[in-house]
Length: 351
Image 1 (spheres, rainbow, N blue to C red):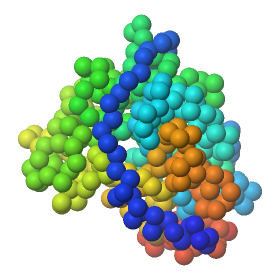
Image 2 (cartoon, rainbow, N blue to C red):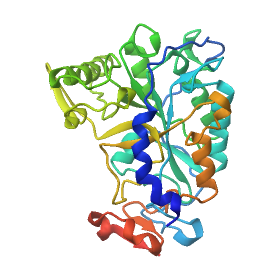
Image 3 (cartoon, helix red, strand yellow):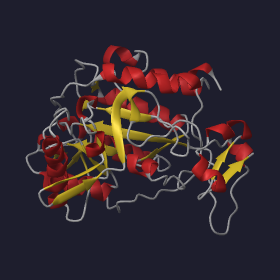
Image 4 (cartoon, helix red, strand yellow):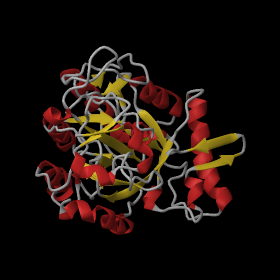
């Protein structure tokens, strides 16, 4: 185990000092992008071998499989023309981030897929990454001439996936009331769902959840009700804490009820400051999933920002999750056996 691996848990202590401020949005629309037809579970060609009912999995050593490594959960806020805060990113920076993730073998998945350990579709030799977007600001999604604008984050993801089918347009969007400042949640929630994006809960009013229990449940239940009204049957199943603040009763972030609406979140996302453990790791905690801030502020060079962490992973200073392409099993080098949660010993493949 490297020193950096050993410090991962301690890095959680600095997360409290990395609280976000509510982000206002500014970005103009330019060229349109047509909305492709897609089910809510996207499927794309895999360039790497993955086991099927008739094909055995590849040799795990050949693909350097390690499904106990860390997963970067990247946290985005505002996509803007002019960067003014550490929560801002330009379109050029975001495009460069996507290109780097592709070049370094990452494969986008949702927060919910990680929480449910639904990672069997990640091609062998590829590393899952989660792209999260908080605050539903306008730069993340807006329209031009009736279609999703190419200069929005969603438009850029869709275009990038068209250019690179091995890198699907998959991300998790954490909404507040009036998503993307468009005045109508019905269309935007439906478009996100049709694209295969995860729709998550970021509270109705984007307020810190150190509130009375009834108010916490109102904030989460009201947002869940809005999503269900926009797309009947659709429910958020993960949530991101506004400003990183937990409720006084932390369990209320996971489950509760407001009026006729119940909510249940299978993962709760923090603000900053490190990669997340594998969901099969003994230290995985769905109630406190850390994230890495992605920003072009200051050239994106700040310690513990996405560039810093991706550099650490690339240099093998911290060990990342690499898929074995063997669904239903957890594959890892024998030297990492002590990291496996005991409940999964029955499906472990150590090599």
